[in-house]
Length: 344
Length: 98
Ligand SMILES: [Fe+2]
Ligand SMILES: [Fe+2]
Image (cartoon, rainbow over all chains, first blue to last red; front, top):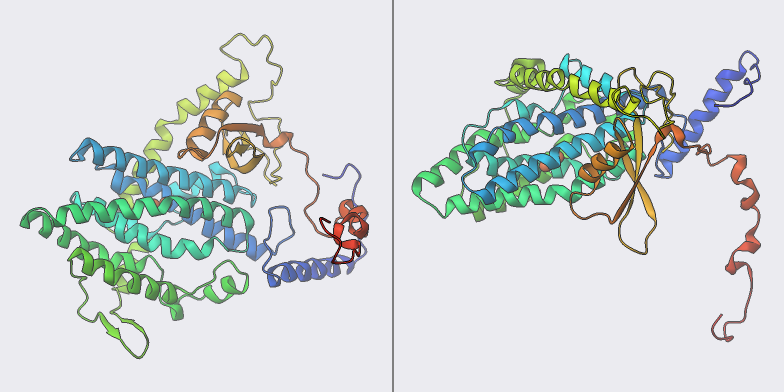
């Protein structure tokens, strides 16, 4: 904050300044340089990013639930330790992303409230239930696999903090996918019943995994602008295609059938043709009518409400309300007087 | 720029030294009620896989920053001093060890 008041701008000069700033912003994007938090940016760019990064953060946090539900039922100590580590990573991913979103001028509390009140969304995949332990493998293989397809290009997104969070996340995702695939391989080497469990799980998760890339390009009106801004670098359909092409040989090696009779190699395109998921179902889930939407948000709200006393007690302790404060001169930790400014 | 929300834990910036011999590098931020818990949270959030041998945390409000704008006059003094770079000096190619 400058200590001296800004000089009054003459009428018209403000608009001129805005045009100049916009040109600088466009030039930075044009050079494929990153936009950093304190740079001037168009309001629509900021809003788009807040929406996208928040939605991404919420997905990581809500995404802990379908897998977290199985930690207590893991079949061995090895599987339990792996699943715990994976779910803990997803919490970390959510925190990296919330921290990136906060550099855009929204508070953590606002973000949490927007998730709990349903004003911001999360990935529709997490509104499907996990019905068997095979789902732990399928989620790692297909759901984290689809997430990797989405996230690798985002490491180069135009907003610096978002790209840096994605780099950290991508480093950890490979473990998620491999542990899932290994789990499924183990089950496929087991009994007929176990093989049937894997196939049944793949049948349920295949189409929702394809939906993770979002609606088809012609129904995704914001894609063009996001690409022009360098926020997105590939369209939904491009990434979906990439995912299908990567997954087919993995399914073959595993010995499962992907539940799409239209899935065939197209020699001419050098890619697989495949069927479309049920987009009506997708929009229903997005609107909140999926099998687990209400349960997921209620669970998050309960955790937030139940944790309120811990947050308050920790603040009170830090403020010295309940300890000997000799030597502690910080004094402003109650948060009422400090004016935090994001700089990095 | 966000003012701190009432009742929200303050924001800390986290710096991690990846291994001995390297500088601490900024890795992100987190909320914590006090310095000690900020360190613990930083360990859990940013070093789950031995990414560090040392962590610094500092209240975000304690950081003073220059404007990141590349046109910032703060950086102007170094902009026109090409003679500070070794490539400014022409040395014949056959002179060794330069
Ligand atoms: Fe994740
Ligand atoms: Fe993951």
